[in-house]
Length: 198
Ligand code: PAN
Ligand code: ZN
Image (cartoon, rainbow, N blue to C red):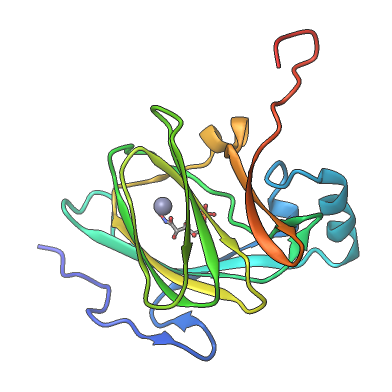
């Protein structure tokens, strides 16, 4: 029998927003093509300093470990591209029925949830001590609508998998914009397909 190599206890540093024993990955604005509506503004910011938009500190078990859970601390920076707040790429789980629990740690966020079967959308405001249940079959994206880093812990089945392709081809129907200094959830304008239906 193979002994587990991952620790039983992991600790979040609330000041530095890191997680012990985790593997860090990060996405810069240059990694987020097609996410924001204002592509020209994104490219200009990439040229300027290509900031880190978010980091994930993940503690993942093998996808073949039946019943196992993985978790990650997401830390999403404050900022905007055009009128849209910084947000994650967003994904569906490859195993579509896999759900996830998010626990807010710091900052002010909105989670966009979109059921890929019937298109039903919800936008859930969350912050420290809030628990958001993301059901299966639901695309999820986090948006930082505050002025401090937004931090949250996501806990998901180890065999959930991350499918970004489905989102990349259509994007979320809702987006979060800053209007009069406040976040507002708006419907994305219908895309005009050249020579076809909109
Ligand atoms: C989270 C996300 C994290 C980063 O841990 O992976 O918020 O977002 P993207 O994966 O969309 O870039 C999660 O939902 N895991 O399943
Ligand atoms: Zn997820």
